[in-house]
Each structure stands twice: as structure tokens, then as C-alpha cells.
Length: 236
Image 1: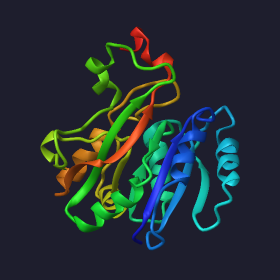
Image 2: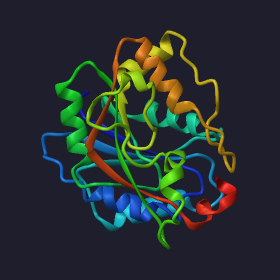
Image 3: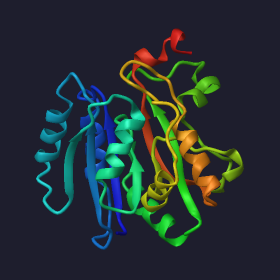
Image 4: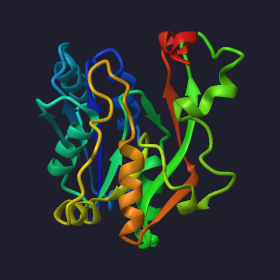
């Protein structure tokens, strides 16, 4: 079914979710576009689920489907698989718990995907933001934080081989076929306090094998909140 399923995978995200959900609630979307929000609680030990439900309830939104689902097995890819399985609509938008989408993000993504059937995976422009400002060295290392432009201009970036998972949009129908054909993530990706990664690249590679394009569009803008403790030298 055409529409957008926004999936936020969460592990101990209670402190980050309020602003993230606030930006999703403020999306400017025509009534013709169907969409929903799915929170995946990846076995959190804080009140992630309660916080998500409280924030959403405060906005008193009744015409958009909202649900919180639980995935016991920790690991970002496990949480994503759960969210995708629960999704109603064709286009899956992976929004991290620290991503603040611009007001037109969902509608722009929907338009790009529906008008370009060869696009399998779509990515956008991530702007870093932090509570105390960014250190002078940040620009040199910003790619390690998956922020900034993913290409010099909008268009086909298949030759790059991957897009960042944050803000990524892809087709559920194609992903489901890939699973049926034997695709499995080889890494668990981020799990608990572990920062192991690679799931984004794996997913993109399989879409390329299936004959689809990777596409970057600079109109898809979002802020990526980076807490101060991730800007310490040891993180680099």
C-alpha cells in the first residue's frame, strides 16, 4: 500500500525522543499521503515506551496510526526488521532517535520515490547540532558521524555503494523479496552500548544487486543531534 511508515528504533531513548517526535508531528503532509509512526523498543531499560506514548498523546493526533512495538533481541538490525515487519506502507523511513526531520521530509521523500521507480534507497542531508556547539576539529571528522552532504549534488549515487541509515527511505516490497531470496544481515549493528555498524551498507548493497539505484537528494534535510559525550577525543 502506498504511503510512508516512519520507523524509530530505540534503545534507552527516553531522553532523546521528545524532540524527535515533535519534528515528526510537525510534518507538512497533504491528506492524500498516508503515513504512520512506529516506535520499536529494543529491550530498553529506561522508560522509552512510556515517554514515546506520552509525547504522542500530548499532540492528540487521531488520524495518524501510531504504535509502539517491542523487540527483545537487542541490535539495531533486529529492531529494524521488527519495525519493517510491522509497517503498513510501501516506503520505510528509518528515523534515528536523534534525528529531527525538516517539515517537508516525508512528503518530499514520498514524491521522489513514487516518481522514480528505479530508486531503491533514498538518502538526505544531515546537519549536525549539539547542546554546547561543535568543536573546531569536527568538520575534519564529520563523516564518521554520518553528517553533511552525501554527494556534491542530488541524483544517482549508486557508484558510492551506500547511504547512511539515518533518514534513509527504501521500498518494503523489495526488501521483503530480498529476505525471501535469502538476504540476512551479517552484523547485528549497534546493540546496547556496542557501536558495531555496517547494516546500512549491507542493505544498500543488496538493493544494488537487485537492480535498484541509490539516490541522494539534498532537499531531504534533517538535524542530527550529537550529545557532548560523543564529541570527546576518545570517540574519535
